[in-house]
Length: 276
Image (cartoon, rainbow, N blue to C red; front, side, top):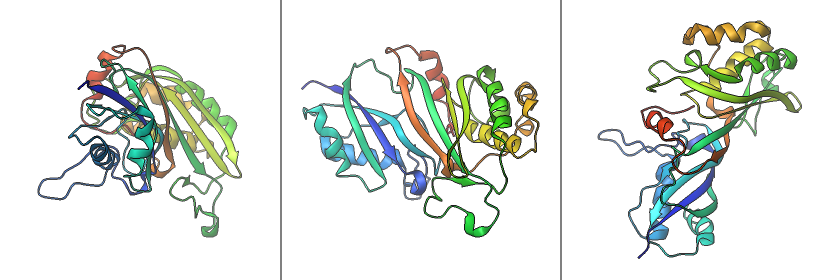
């Protein structure tokens, strides 16, 4: 039989997942993770003990509409049948959107060239009855008004190749904290709902949530709009803003280059720790 490598695009509501990556605490039941339930469903379809690997280790409560996963299988099923077949065996908070056959050299982590995350925050919600209700698992909220012009001024300073030590958790477990951000923008998308888009070649643990927390502090007037360069230069977590909660964050898409294009970054990505 011919072994094929299958690439999946996966969406999930992260509310009730302990993140993407499988976790099995000693002497306890495995935690419910997106990778864990997806792998079980894939195994049921292909009838093999395959391993499913993902591109981004999203943290507990973080959502995805464009996570990418891959596995090797001897199953000869038409590739177009994988999304409905796998999704039919998944719980209602995760779905396989697309499937395609990729070259054997395709590396789901190492060949990534760009990712985009979005963070949504409801603002100027001072009263309890104004806070998010039905969308509370997909929006963070703050009580303050936000100055979008100031936030975008600060966001522009994020763009570029920098050492983002100030924007990651301590003990982040990564070999290098240098990343390139190609876009960082703030926009009003609904009544009193801000959307922060961050795009780059890779992200550190909690990096997007800390960038967002810093931008929110700028928008609330708690930091000057021109302070971002100094925060980056400080190289200390204490220099940046708060870590925003996970529910506002969504992995939107992942872009790939040719197989083998990102081998050096793969070495760093394999080290312990979630991205966000």
